[in-house]
Image (cartoon, rainbow, N blue to C red; front, side, top):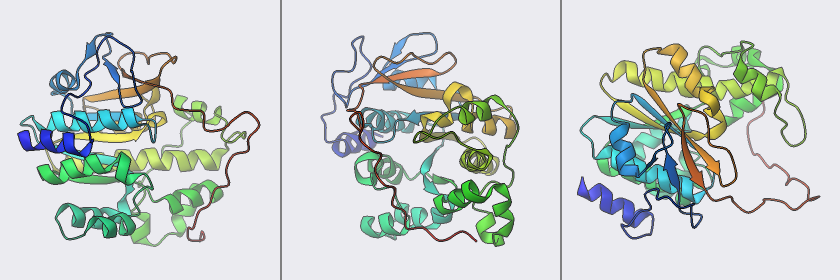
Length: 304
């Protein structure tokens, strides 16, 4: 697996002296400090050894943070050194583009065509390319785990009943069962303000459509690939306090051993056990006080 380690160094455009979680605070936006659920600081290599018995490793992220994305690639490279078969699952790709993702991994699509046809996130080249290239080099599966954005948007507008309007193929792009219970995760979501507004029931249905779909995607893969493990990349809200995607996967497969790595910014409190803490530097403030939120531009199909 030495080729994988060398590929990682090249993709990250750094030397092979990767930061390993020393006892100092992250020095640059690329650095990280990893602490386990007992408060012990670990290198990525040691973390991979400790995670060897886990069925699913969920690595939360602050979208666009270079330190978090560097850690994800470093951990994946370390996990690929182990003999147990591994798959990578990603929030950043949706079920309706699994075929395009497979085509790129098998060398049937070039990168430009892949990015366009798979509707890759705009930050793909600097945030997720290292993960995909590691997976491609190692020949492992990558699970396009999420629900399509345009369907989730329509659930947020019309509620979960929107799913009944979809053709069978499109309905299969979203989890067959949405978790709409009055649980702690729903309470947390409903008490969170987005762009200055509190969410409603329809917006929670959209949120859990993401969580349930990612959970179902991983459960389906594990059911058909016994003995495999999965590393998931996902926004940190989806795994906070073991809720969201983690909770919904556990409900589907209660016997799974799931590890959760939660990123925190300097100055934020570390998560409670059993979550692990991934400390990174704070990013620049996206807006000055009084500056408006940027307009959201989406070229998506109309809802049915």
